[in-house]
Length: 108
Image 1 (cartoon, rainbow, N blue to C red):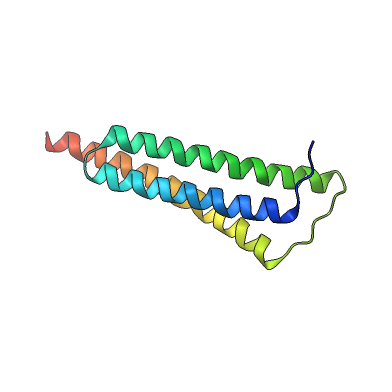
Image 2 (image 1 turned 90 degrees about the vertical axis):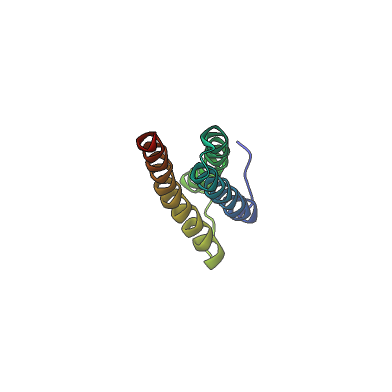
């Protein structure tokens, strides 16, 4: 397994979490406009970016478990915070999209 530099992991977490957040909010915007197929595409892109962030986080944990300690910096903590808030927001956005779909059905 290739060892990743701390900066690669940190920036990868921030970039991928940011991409996931952007796609999820775009999906919500599309759902509010009734464009559910487009919203689903955006959510799939959000999930893909989240998976990449999760894979980087797993690489960090694996490297540490193998004895390759990484210094925990404020930037690393920020990247973890960014990822965790993105996960929370995406879960909420998925629920909001479902509410929009249900409301649309009720409207007829």
